[in-house]
Length: 55
Image 1 (cartoon, helix red, strand yellow):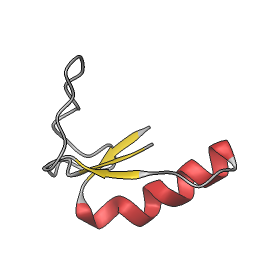
Image 2 (spheres, helix red, strand yellow):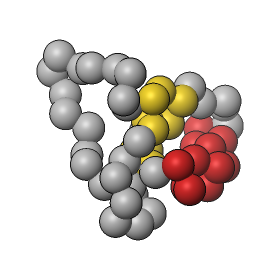
Image 3 (cartoon, rainbow, N blue to C red):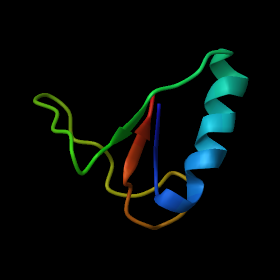
Image 4 (cartoon, rainbow, N blue to C red):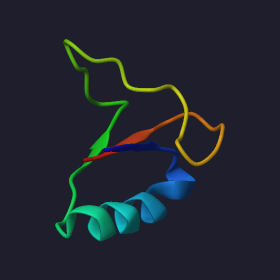
């Protein structure tokens, strides 16, 4: 699972496929709320705001 900014979505997609050998789902964090989990605020690759969850 990767939380990334818009600039790093493609990199996260490639990393997910390399690790799990399956196609991920991409969730827009602006449009989704989680009842029991708060996503990290920053991208795992940089200090920008995390906008997407690749899972």
